[in-house]
Length: 190
Image 1: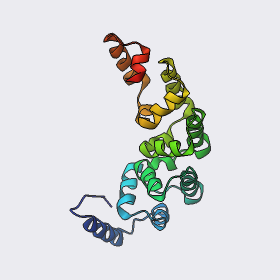
Image 2: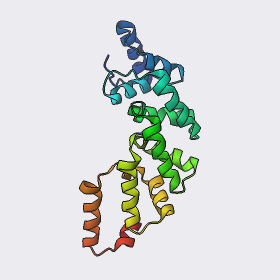
Image 3: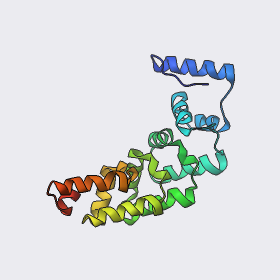
Image 4: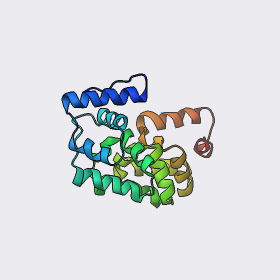
C-alpha cells in the first residue's frame, strides 16, 4: 500500500485502515511497533524511509534498538522520532555501529542527555561508523583548533555536520573562509 497525504490526520488514519483491511500488508515489525505506541502515520513514514519491505526482525533488531535508545534516556516520543526519521537504524549492527558511535560522542565528554539530544536531532548518527565517519570528523574539527569540549558542543548544536563529506563539503567551505582572510580559530568559531 502506498502512503499518501490527505487533508487531516483522521482522514489519513482512515485511509491507512482501509488500505490495511484491503491488502492486509502490515508486517510483523509494523505490528510490534504499533503495539509500542507508533501511530499508523509514523509507521507509514518509517516504511517509506526504510526503502524495502519493512520487516526487520523484532527480537534481534527492533527490541534491542528500542531498548538501547530508551537506555540513553530518550522519552517514548523521542524514540519514535528517531525510528521514524531513520528506520535504517534497524539494519545496522547495534554492537558494531551504533554503540561505538555513542562511545565516540561520550569520549568527547558528552553526558547521556547530550548524546540523546544529539541523536534526536540527527538520528542518522545511529547508522554512522565511528571509525569511517565520526572519528575523522572529530580529528578534522580538532585540526581547526577545537578541544574535546568544543567539538562536543559543536556536535550537540549541529549534529548534521557529521553527515557532510569532508572532501566535497567541509574542506571547500573552510578553504573559502580562509580565502576571505579567516584563520583556523576564526573558522572554528563560525
